[in-house]
Each structure stands twice: as C-alpha cells, then as structure tokens.
Image (cartoon, rainbow, N blue to C red):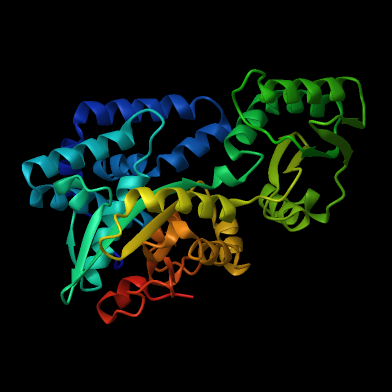
Length: 400
C-alpha cells in the first residue's frame, strides 16, 4: 500500500465511525479510558494496543494538527473500509460490518480487519483484481486474487508474539504497576541506585488457579522489607545489587538504552525513580523466546483450514504485540525467515505458494527505515506448482 497523502479526510473518518456504529464506538473509547486509568504502564500499553481508535478519534476532533505517517496510514485504511463497504453486496456489507465490530468488542483490536483491508489495497496496487470472497461468498479464505487469467486464494491471520514468550509483556506491565508504589516508598527510606534481577523459569502470566503476579509481588515486597539480597526457588530467582551502569546518573532514556544493551532485546525492563533514588527491575524467562516458532506453528494450524487447495494459496500473517527492536531481531537474525521456510517444507503447506509476514511497523510505517521493504516479508514456496507463475509473481516472489 503506497504512502498516504498529506491530507486526512475527516468525512471518511466520520463515515467509518457511522459504519461501525456510533454507540459501539463511544463504548470502546470509554473502555480505553478505563484501561488507561489502571496504571501508568498499563495505560500506555492500552493506548498502543488501541492506537487505531485513539488516533481516529483524535483526528476527528482535530486534536492532531499535523498528522504523521502513522496517523495518515490509519486514516487511509479507515477510508478504505468505507470504500470497500460501498462496493460490496448487501450480504457482504453486513459481514464486513460484523468484522469491524468484532474488532471493537471486548478483548479485540482493529488490527486483523485493518490488516485485511490494507492487504487487499496492496494487492490491487500490484495489478491484481481483488474480490472480498470471505465477505461476499463466505469462503474460508478472505480474498480472491486474479491477474492475467490466474487466480489465487489469500487468507489473512493474526498471531500474537506473546504466544512465543514465557514472560508475557502484559503480565510484566501489570506487575510493575502493582509494585511501583512499594518501590517508591522503599527508595525514600533507602536512597541510592539499585538493580533487581529476576529470572523466571516458569514464566509469568495472568490468570490460572494461583495468580503468579500476586505471588511474585509478595515475594519482592517481603525481600525488600527483610533487607535481603536474594531469594530463589523453582519459580523465580531474585537478586538485588547496586546499579553500576554509567548511565545510572543520566536521564531515564539514557539509562534504558544502557540497560537494553546490557540485558538484550528479550529482557523486560522498568525504572522507578523517587527523588535521587533509582530502582531498576530487569526480568528474563528461563529460556529464550520462541516468537518465530509460534508464528510457524500458527501457520501450520491455519493453512489447511483456510485454503481450499483449488487454487494457489497465500497466507498473510500479521504479527501483533511486537515492538521495533524485537521485529528487527526476528528479521536480521533470520529467525522469521528460517521458521517460515521450515513451514513451507511441511505437509500442512502443500496448498501454500507463499507466506507473508508484517507487523504494525509495515502496516502504519509506510516506508519507515525499520519496516520491511514492499510492506511485508514474503517467502515463496519453491515446491508449489504455481511458484514460478509469472502472473502471481508480484504477490509471491520472495522479498529476501
């Protein structure tokens, strides 16, 4: 999808809200406000998770005077939703509306449907005729592409990077928000610079019979109250040391950069400050993350169910809950490519001529330096009979 224009159509944004339903839209905005109030870090995460709704509403209210690339991309996809709706049959329009409203339901986001709409627009720009067959014909795949007499099925799917982590970022943020007041109180009585390293062999998630967040929070409080330097069992290893990094006297941004270099991209980091005191939390799982493995497993589950095999199939994966640093690591270290190409050797991939992978960086980056070229990472299946079909090349040719 090409970069959006410098202008934003407020009429299209109003039409988008009318399409999803003004009452549902207001309810989502109210829910986001409640989530923001849960805590500083959880609030920031809620704004990031629901960036589409927050941005569209701010644009509608003219709160953003000079929209950046991300804001204009979001507005462009919202306008695409309105145009697509107008071009569908009555049944297709209703299915699209259901998909949009599912994104606003509790626990959902707008990212899956925005990924679908953006993928359709991108394929049109590559010269394909695109039919929203999932909406129009209730096919298991989403789009039917045709070019020069050749057709292909395209199925869009979303996978969370959390599926490949033992320590979930959402759980980590909730823990840090819980313990932040305790750390500020402790720093007031123990001024200085400290580093608490946590290794969590059993991971950290919310829910279950025993709330792991509450247990870990209690252990940290007990450890600090007892002036203990260490605590360990099979679930967690905690060690408190002086913070020795040179950037500890710099601002928080400089400190976080130094911590990231020290602990790597997989570490979960948080900084609490009180007066001149600084308390750093650094957590890791007991093993390396397997985000790319989780993506491969998801593709193996989705492909047989979503692609019929009557035509070449394209699997377009959207990777959610990842950030710029992790996404660059997955690409630069060839982890994503390795798992994608391994998937293409499996029996589950026999209907797949190519897989594509994109994150929010590609969806809303529009040519940003850290985004994958051509708006996605693309891997062709050389074993598929249609792999070298010229008409399909723009959609299936490997990008790396």
